[in-house]
Amino acid sequence: MTSRTSTSELDPQHFRHVVGHLASGVTVVTTRMDGEAYGMTASSVTSLSLAPPMMLACLNRATPTTQAVSRSGRYAVNVLGQGHAHLAQQFAVPSDDKFKGVEVLEGRHRVPLLAGALAHIECEVVEEITGGTHSIFVGRVLLATAGQGEPLTYFRGGFGRFEFARDDAVYQRARRQVLERQYAADEVLHLDDLAHQLDVDALTRLAADGLVHRDPARGYVITPFDVATSDEAFDARCAIELGVIQVAGTTAADDDVVELRRRFETMASLLVGQRFVDFESYLDANYAFHEQLVSLARNPALTAAFGRLSIKTVMTRSFGSTPVTSQDFIEAQRLITEGLEQRDPTVATAGVLRYTELAKGRVREILAQTGGRL
Image (cartoon, rainbow, N blue to C red; front, side, top):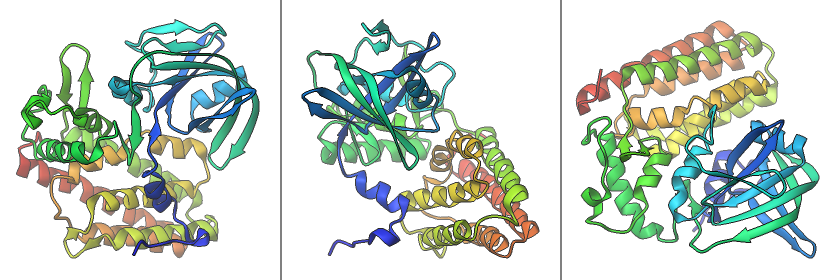
């Protein structure tokens, strides 16, 4: 029987997992403000009305693109095709120049358009609505054009086509090989090696995981990963969390701390003995726990900085090659939780430092076991 969760008990991570089963098209929403081009990947985009023609785009309010759309009052929806997963990935992550290497056209209404997109829809904002963490832009369509091709889709956290059952086996095999370091850092990854020329989109899903990246000259290559990369990410997270504890360790709202405890319990249930019950679910729950910890400061800048660490990718590269782990991680995070519940910053700080030490040490063990670079 399918489990059901009432609205009052609904966890954001559970909701994300459920709605991830709703396949959607993938677009890049672009705009221009003060002469500068902005863009971000968005799947929460849909037509709203035919008469008059209107579009609806939901964008995270923490992003520069959302702020630029709000100020400029115009945006374009660039519908991506099957061969554009690299564009979806490029515009999905923070960057000083998201348009690097991308051919751009000037829209009739002064918005940047991605030249190779399957379709372009230029809109004028007629209404902006706040919904949770997002801004909902209702746009009157000024111009719409479309070419030939099949759309890129987004389903359960990956880009691809409507062939996920067949593609997933190849993706999982390729993912395991990369995590087990069967390929050297910076080695070109050929799909022929994985599936005997099977027409799949496994490489673009690996790119979304941060395991490979697209080199314009060589194609998809293995993203290097070593102790230095891991240490930088874990040290940065540690610094952010120590700052949060210093600011909010004694003043965090009771409801926020209760939510932290609930997320801790969800995470702890996915690590039994010395093994992950379900690594992907644990990864989501772990991220949710630390995201809630950072949010105790109620400082959007800190939360955004935490999001830019790509900590999920680092943890996948660090721990995703083995189901074996240690309960010491849970005990360190329990210390963080109890310290904040007791309004004792010293205890919470000790937990953060211990957890960081454990994570960095475990990476060294796994890289040694799998032949990674130390």
